[in-house]
Length: 503
Image 1 (cartoon, rainbow, N blue to C red):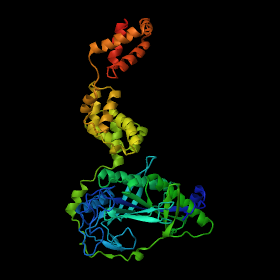
Image 2: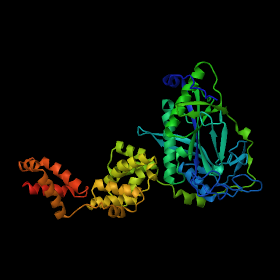
Image 3: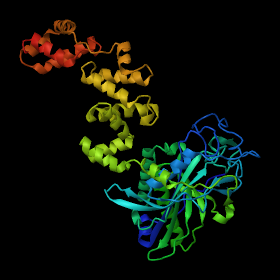
Image 4: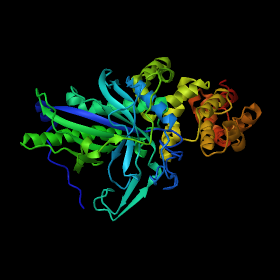
């Protein structure tokens, strides 16, 4: 089955001139608990399919759920970080629908009684301002299994010849964070949506409640978009673009939907309320007609007690909320004395926390930034992993920097030591010793290498003696090559100049 091509679009400036966009963002966050929401199965990403399952998460008859205490505490912490009210009493509901990735044919979720309500997040924008996004609710639920469709052009069920089911993800704890209608964003609506998801991701990562890896699905965004004529009070009909899994895609999907809906309305048509799929080529296509809450036949979950977090627990968890990531970044930017551009590069590389941790281990901020922001970024790109997934710790990087500061390694040799650490050869000093990379500090050995190089290049010696001291660089290079880069280049230069009467 061929996917519908991109629709006709209205010029973006004309959309803004005629309509006001109204957004609603639903972000699903997989919690990084050791076990699932209602059973003791592991939650390790990437395990062999259907190896992290049990009668509870497979929905076998007679199996009863038991609530994960750590997941509840994470939900409360998230609600507090989003300035929500934590309700004194809430309960779970059954959301009934039939789909292969739902082994019980219902999802245990929260419906009309969520754990956290009525909050907000002040989202930092690139121009230095903020935009307040209201939070309607944050509620607990379980994730579904994962379907893999084979044989279709898009990887979706339409046109597939085979579908494979992995229930490892079924039952993984989820928090769904739902915004209030986002109005007043105007032409900046797509960028503000991206900034909101970015800020939310950064906040959740700082709280250590989720690894928020969008490419792995541990943070997914459903983007609701509608348009209303300027000055109108009633919202337009919305569409919901499902499971958008990158920050850029959030922005692109919303902009596309604004232009697509604008073209439909401008031509006198009516927007269909439906879910839509986002395509990496930059457009959306129809999914299914959007259900209403009544279609799910919600009713209270009979196998779980209500959740009643006490005031003492809530206050204890409130004390664990960290400094807002963007506030912390501004503070440490001032401490490090770096420009906005440098800080932005470190943020984009995912290096800020790693640099800060390396500084805490005794390294200078300049050296820590240089290693994580340059050489190690290259190594992460070569390996195709995130920077914090490299097999090297801030303590090990700080140890390498210390070896350079102590004169035991040159920067060039230090890179070889880091490569050895990345290869699993041990701690920095162990790698340095095993590979024989320590700088040569013995004047006698360096003098011998200098004498050999000078004897082999009498023309260069004449230039140096005539006052062209820059010519010494050629001899330094020869000595460094002869010593496999382990000589102290500064000391070698001093010996060369002294030997040529320029010391």
